[in-house]
Image 1 (cartoon, rainbow, N blue to C red):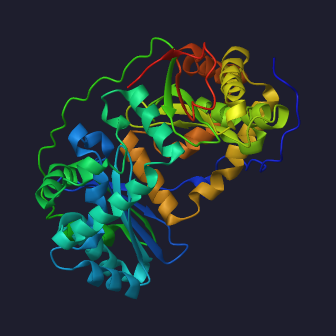
Image 2: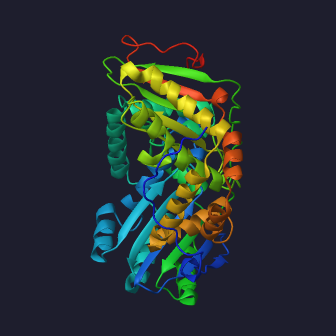
Image 3: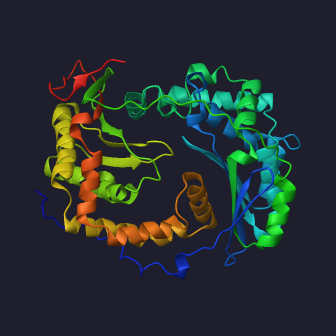
Length: 449
């Protein structure tokens, strides 16, 4: 049964999608296979250029954990013509910004600059993407930084639980690997291995380039062809991926850590691909379950009503392959069992009882009202265009998603919840000092791995 309750204020939804949310994209594919997307936006004299390569954690073998991020972060740290210091100085002199972003499915390299500096910005981006040097001193500097970070994280409860959870639901599939890598793999990375990973995947026929801002499409295409046309294509060989395990029962994994005064709990399982038709229903459903802070069911049940923990939340992470979902909280040891029971109860209640019309309207108002914020900058728009290309989404999918959100029904949300939330098939990971407290029996079949 859904409890009636007031909801916090949400932004008022905008008018139905109109021209202000429509951005025409001009596309081309160069002879070397590079796909290019241009979006003219002359309102401000700013330009954003981003290259997305299908190279991420999913491209790593078990002995290569962290190789994708290591390689990506070295690209702006020196090319065959410019070392890291010169690159930084030239980017700074333009008032531009050069950066990278890695994910489980892809890697991105981007530069933003004033439109008047487009020739220099394109030259630098092309050089960083197509001619990295992997200088030995930069490799060692990056290795030191990663190992220092991994040392800091080795006792972090959230990181320990997250990594164990991903291993539990993904098994041998690369999605279980920590994106920063493992100390034993990172210590072994050397120039030849980094160069090999780069040569294998950083190819124009494995990449998309998005340019958004104050540009002239014809001249921009010509400049891009000059700078990126010499990037050599190659056959992309992708090894067959291990199957993602199909859950058969609810499982429980313990992580004992001495001296803990709190427990860290994570409950969840396999989710969806980004191109799944259930994406919009699940975004709205998750907002109601645990994605909306103090307005969510999890927060209300575990904090407001029961006083079990300061916070509880949930999230769905779609990916190119099957993503995952989870709910999490950090209660005191004395309330650990009750908190876990409440999380399972709320997941089951949403699956079996569904959401109310009031909850759905509240979630719709939030997402429809926040749409303009997600389309404000050239970088935002470049990311949207790249997602559309990479995940094979509909043209201007952000408008299609808005249309779906406006028309979606309680029945559609509830059907999606029933398909993807099954309390009997969840993976549970619990970190605590088990010398001080024990888990009650019945939460799941205990697994040691």
